[in-house]
Image (tube, rainbow, N blue to C red; front, side, top):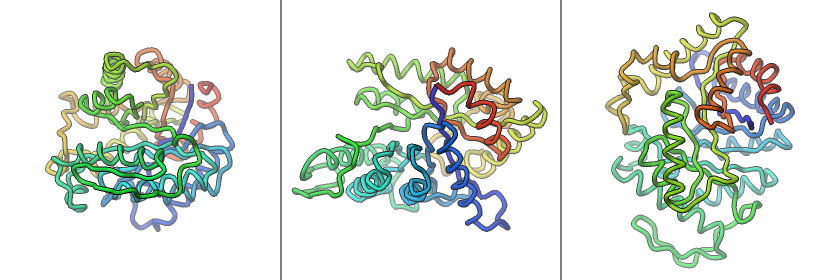
Length: 331
């Protein structure tokens, strides 16, 4: 099993200088480079202390400068918020500067507040996302780009630099909804699976993707499908559960909770459960290192997980993931 880290930049305590949050994340990335992780996946968010990283490409350059072998993933570049040519240039430049270590993940986004601030209607977000991805891939693989789309029109534009990896960096589409999964499968894209689905939902979505991929005449052979999981690890189950509970409370209060329903593209039902209980029982992997290894192995069996994109919820969680869990599960 491959293991990467989904790196958030949560600013929980605003008395702490924001630069300190970035420094701690970059220190963690240096550790990843020498301890067997496959990649760091950088999360892009806007206008929220949930994760203060508005540019995964700038942050990716910082990560690349401090590492030698670690792959630099975007999870994700929120494609509708970019001019597609600028996005193609920035990711290609990062690929060149990193020595060909970019994993490009692209996504539509889901926060209405983000769409509103960037002047994009929610109803346009999916079609803008699809068109932007199409343009980026064509910009990377054509000497000059001519394009006639719904939103963008280009005539023989030479987009430079081209990525170092040929024909382009490995590419994934973030897919949480069944509609997004079906679009990705129909277009033969590999997918990134989100950290907020329950374990049962994760398995169900993974099966649905496989079915739709086969129906479209594409093969699963050789595909890597990272599955993002929030993880709390500590010396005892009780301590780990406390970390998980605090993280669930923070996540709900700052980003996905009922108070944010007016801004979201989709309404979360939490499977009819109390939202905190939903995260504790069905979403977050938590416990001692041994218990978390067992939970990961269960997902390997139940959901076909071959790539864990771990989001450690505390410093201790990351340390124990690195020292006690990674050596037991990494291929």
